[in-house]
Image 1: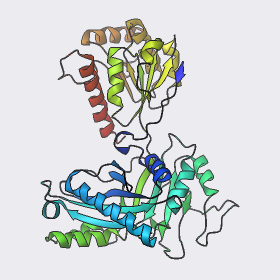
Image 2: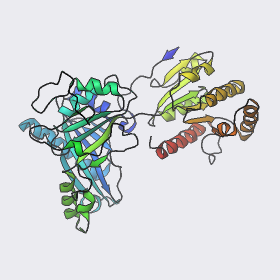
Image 3: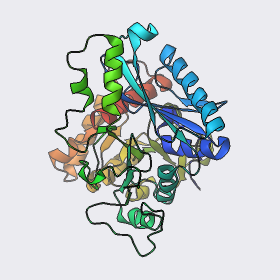
Image 4: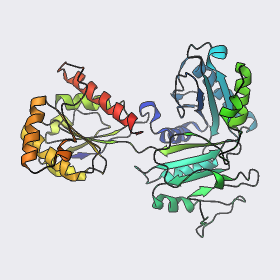
Length: 413
């Protein structure tokens, strides 16, 4: 039995924000996309955090409290105005001093960008096209904060780029059906008659792995950056005004489709069940492998399941960079799995449930099998948090999930 994970509309904290946006635009028509684009000092959320707002729904969060209350009110006012006048084609930026203006104890400063997105919004429409069939690929967008007709789409895989270029258009709106190749730019649309922003000068490369969301400027030495605009300004309102003015000259860059860690868990017993429940809250794709159909059927519907009498054979099916966790009902199967995974040597993590004694036994047997010490050292066991002494399955699972979350944070996953 193989079961693909069913897509959950609201992924944890909008991990796949663009898919959530696409679904909301389809159902509601008009969505205000609110994004944290700069943070100064202490703030409740990080750069790139989002909330999607319609007339009746909200998804995601920019930190709660008065900041989010104002963001929702502002967004719905923008929806009302746009319905009356069909205005707001360009993003709107508001900078908030959390302490003086909103009475929030964190006391920092946050800039929010408000974007109206409908089905025919240019960058959104083209992003929908390029993301079709590109699951698991890194896709990026960089769009002007002055003119939304100026944007650039970047894909790590050339196939997605070629597919996008079928829809690329010139500034006059004519399709480039003959290929539309533009040297030095990968899968892009830019330079509308009204903007002519020089997107070619942006510090972007076709492969943007490791770069987080943020504001870019065509000239890296430009003084019109938020940091320089804030220098020497003390008054909160003046700071907010200066920051907003500086930001409006920039470009917003972010990832459209995050490449999530693949967590392959061998064994769906009590701890495996609890671990899959915990991983529902984390940014990852979980796969459960077990020989028992009945235990696999009890897993959350979003988990991809593989029922097989030979778990070891499934090791080769995992993608490069997979995170393996071994916790079957049999120590013999656990050992064979560890051997198969260590032979691959292209994985991100190998964790084995058990005691220090179990690890010591496995280390001796692996060495006897001819594995080098550098290979054996990659075996993590025991797994989870050593400070949690309980053997309750739910607490063991919580420790493992917490440890994984720490590692993903450290590796910018």
